[in-house]
Length: 201
Image (cartoon, rainbow, N blue to C red):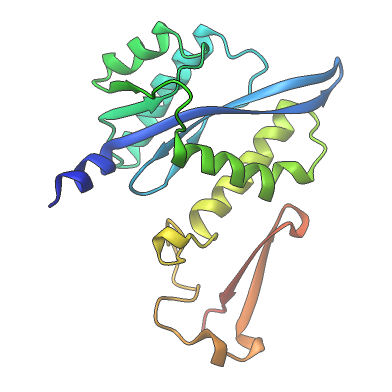
């Protein structure tokens, strides 16, 4: 197996994204920390917070490693940018779990994870007035489920990242010849996100 393939399988990138949300105290900035596996493009998201302090970010680093390994995804190295929010506490929490921390060069993009940020904002979050952290978490969970199980990915032969069921159109089927009566649509978030699939026989 090529060395690059093995390295990508255990390499992750991480970054923050944020949105302004409406709360009882007025408009606040809400933050989410994301982790993306370079090979599979699988994503793990933190809960939303208004204060991404050292204690919170340490807890998210530990939770990420545990969750990834529970799902059978190897974690050997994590690449992050030089954002001041990534303190030594964050790096130490990963190293205790035998994860090597890599830093990007100054002003260098963390391309894969930044592309996901663009996707979740343009395809989901930008379409809502968000009311608080819980609402933000609901939107992120719905989008992440769609992203993993339904959304086609060009880099993955236009297939979903995770194919859990057999009801969808499979590789090699001539979907253009299917009668409309055999096609169903699953909608999320009031119809914003749509997934078309072949009905089970």
